[in-house]
Image (cartoon, rainbow, N blue to C red; front, side):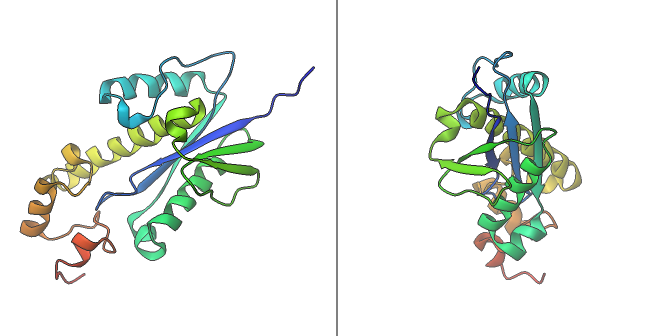
Length: 192
């Protein structure tokens, strides 16, 4: 009888935006309860992502999301903050994985072996699931930030540097949700 290896897929959302946390997710799928339709979250509509996120939470053996806050991003840099969020997500799993498959070309330091897979969110189901949870979790957080600071339009652009966001930043200056270390915010000449 072959031994089942518990594999966690790991991905993040929110490395590029000018505001909000970076969010990571870790998912250990259950082969007996598949989630049909898993794909890179960027290729799915918001409605499809939300539906799949609910299925992933219901059917996965274990899942978790974690984040690194704006202050951590500014203190560490976005890469190190992303690795921190990924590590937190894996450590928060109810079941410890024996292996982690990480989207991209770098792995966080974990208690289990880890392997980076470029385009893993497209090619590996567990990473696709993590991609979906990270994206839907972060999008929900940005909708909350929009309630606190509606003048920036976070619910629409999710913190990315769109023309509308840059115009709002020029008009209002940064709020506490903005990443001070990111160029469009840092170069604005504001007093922090």
